[in-house]
Image (cartoon, rainbow, N blue to C red):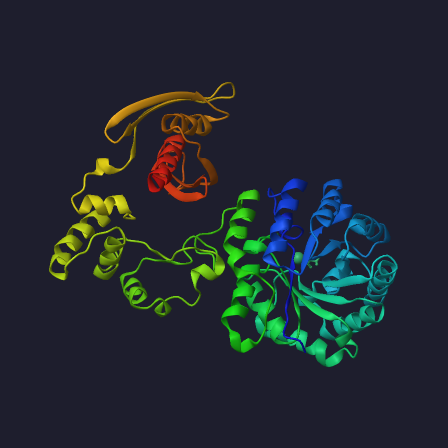
Length: 495
Ligand code: KIV
Ligand code: ZN
């Protein structure tokens, strides 16, 4: 059996089913082109019968993308299949993904039917689709809860009818890895034509087991994983693409490989997150903001001695440019010395104790210590910070949001006024005017600290100028003031 695992990306179909995260056709095409550069084998581009937008997206993605197979979803219904085939007319390598429920829950309650009749409908759908497109994938919906003997019968029948790929979805994220792995093994042991098709795993994350289940599936013979960027998808989401890919890359003994260019994982994660307006949780494996940030003293000390002590993946391998040693009250002397050296201070060991004492006092008051704080600690004035917000006035509302802002630049005050399409736009335009430069906000995330309308809001922002990208942070009870602080914080890191 080959050790190549096909990566079937369903960010634009199952991933896009997240309420409130719908994309325009233009955005979908943009993401599809990046998925092609990432090296996915299949892009599930949509469910054409579901809406004119999905139909059009499949057409546009088919025109824009050359290498991956473009797949369109259908129910086991002729008009769905006709519509999918029509949308796929512009691709060189199209696939129809059709299927029907396989668990008794679906057979009885969704279809009010019998196992025999549902199996016949599945086979008929594959035969019908095969007349229109050569590459047919069949999904046995809710296979996670289906009776294995019946599932094996269904898989054998659809392969005989012409299915080239058979998908065994754990639609409700119900299985444990042992159970799911055993299900795939059962199929390999009991379906006599199974080697004529690729078996695919499609796991949902309702119990947090999607990645583990997908891995159990490929270890037991499946050769395609259906997954999404950042693990997005309905309810708790789908298998996360970056996780399964990095598991296979890290665990060489599994002898499984993909065609993914892992250095593109972090950039595409951020692209999908911002286009879908769905923040990535900070502790998300592989692509979370903290995935490579070490803040405890023991870890930082080990990491400075040798990266391999606390890092199993090179951050650069997934497109993260630096491991961050975050200085907090839990950091040790070694981390402080390391960060001070990075910004140009050579510290003798006998002086370190005194500086460390002062550092701990500061870290007790302020959560994260940045380079400007360190300079202050080493006796340089805080006014060295290039730009300081002195004053701001904002007019909000649905007519003409306006801002007037006063900044201190190296000790000198300068002000500007501007209108904008909202208060943050107006305020940041004032800053751009004063600095005579244009910055672009690439990512913007507001979070409450404890909740309630009197709460302090925290703003994280990614700001770009040319090729320079920096993140900034600001906190205030006023969300616009917090945003301006975050914007200035990012710019201060650049200049
Ligand atoms: O989860 C599922 O069963 C699906 C199928 C439609 C493939 O998304
Ligand atoms: Zn699904």
